[in-house]
Image (tube, rainbow, N blue to C red):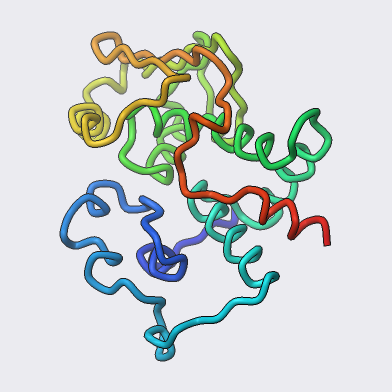
Amino acid sequence: MARYIGPVCRLCRREGTKLFLKGDRCFSEKCAIERRNYPPGQHGQTRPRFSDYGMQLREKQKVKRIYGLLEKQFENTMSTANRMKGRTGENLLSLLERRLDNVVFRLGFATSRAEARQLVRHGHFLVNGRRATIPSMLVRAGTKITLAESSRQITRIVGALEALERRSVPSWLEIDKDNFEGTVKALPVREEITLPIQAQLIVELYSR
């Protein structure tokens, strides 16, 4: 399956904000944004001027990179959001937040979404008691995500849970660290998604 394998710190610099793609490194002084807060490339330190289309495109690219989606995956998610009732932008963010790999990351089982995606693919998690290996699987209210018994000694997962105080668990999720289990208490709403995302710009881009 196609995936981005290039340097992810360049993506943060390109978007001009932390996308938290490198786990612990993003919270350290080694973070690329802290050291070189300008776009990569020989023209990176010049002041960019974006048209309306450029601003919309950059916002779409930023969201794609935050959640680790490829272009076709994002288009499909956008199409689904457009068919749902309510505001398309809010529907889009809700669908992205409900992805299983994102929920695993939000619960603190992984330090980045990329790491969470790999853990899900390798079958380390149970969804309502059944093993799940599809990162794009959408969770619902009441869904229980449990770390498999055989995976509870994995150093990376244990370390991620211990470092959970660096970032809080969203109010629509609940984590039971003692039992390695998380619960989706409700579906996420826009007010609970604190990422610096202007979803309306993405809607306008796809409305052209």
